[in-house]
Length: 399
Image (tube, rainbow, N blue to C red; front, side):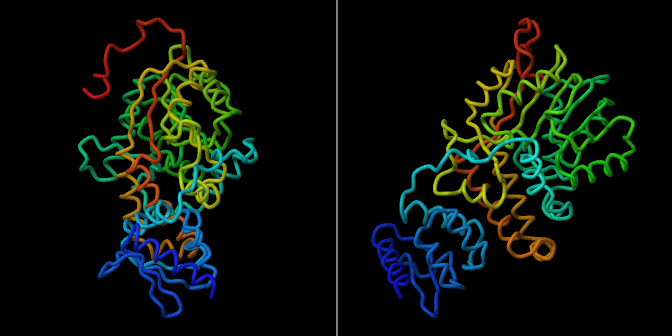
């Protein structure tokens, strides 16, 4: 069969020039990609179409073959992800792909649908692998040995400390998730809080959690688009939301934050960024896979683009903190929880979606470990204020 012959030639090339501890099993035959006594990863071809994906071993092709059930894979999950990247690098070099999310038209309807596709899988699904407060963003590990639950609380506290939240303030959380930051802020500082989300399931669960906490008089959750919000807030936080805005929409996004911020207010944007200065997708098709199966329309700006568009939006950057190592660990812990609860998750969302999220979480952990993507917290205020409004140092954040 021609596909089998081509696979034999690819395996022979890898054995000679770039051996890998991987084995391919198909129709009773084993094809080794390296001269290793025991492979770390074994790929089982379940349907002939799987060979076509493996002969062009981009990450999106390998991922789709696994998601569609054309290929099953044995081995430790980290080894599987490492092997996929090694195959993509050594099988053939592919240039960076199109601008991430460039074909997606960002408008209220499309953004709502994209958010609901990702976040409305089910609340029970997310509860299987997140911490008890259901914080779906990078945790903060100041010592490096905190539990996931403790690190998520530390992240929230780190943000609230950075924005100098005080009793009597009003706080807006754009993309509030399941409400953990708002509940923490109301309890710790007795402030009035508003959280907005486009996810129906997040809205329902966040509202329920606020009610259980007895904080209905201080915390309100709304199902709405940030572009439709009016009013003024002393402090604004946005955690893991601006990735959905699109690069072209960033100046307007930051301008809206400025419009919603009091003249002496502070805002903090916490979000994932690309390491590509021209906002290209992650290499070897990883971005294509995420766009197709996980985050439709997601687009990661470079940190430089983020800072310049923040200034275009009328905001002055006060502080920038790289949390890439923290997100690598966060995702590893999420992935471990996902593996532990794999049986229940399969029953909850079905085999195909289970596979999508399995390799998505582990693949993202790999990407943050290896500087493929990053994440930053950026503190800002309305531009043009007197220098006396600036802190002398970062001591108040860490002291």
